[in-house]
Image (tube, rainbow, N blue to C red):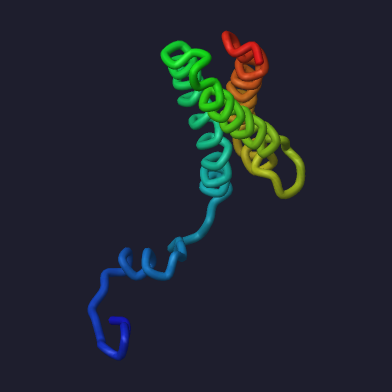
Length: 130
């Protein structure tokens, strides 16, 4: 039960959390759970970059030189996501890479491999030779 504008209302816990914008986790945090949460950020960055890569090439091939600005903007967004994911996977201090590598070296190595491949693909930026 919460008070909204002086009225008492029954609200589910999930609705209340959404209203105040907070996340509440019940239970103890294990090292594996912390690593899964830490991996979510870089994985989202890499997924966004991987999804944008074909979109960039399709946009460029369909619109060509008429709207190269859109292709360049998408290229920059994808490239920044790859860089954020790659930097976040560095196993130092407060970065997520340290939390992931202490739990599973194989998972960390696979994330780094995907990030490096995406970085190379974005760095080549074919067929966008701008």
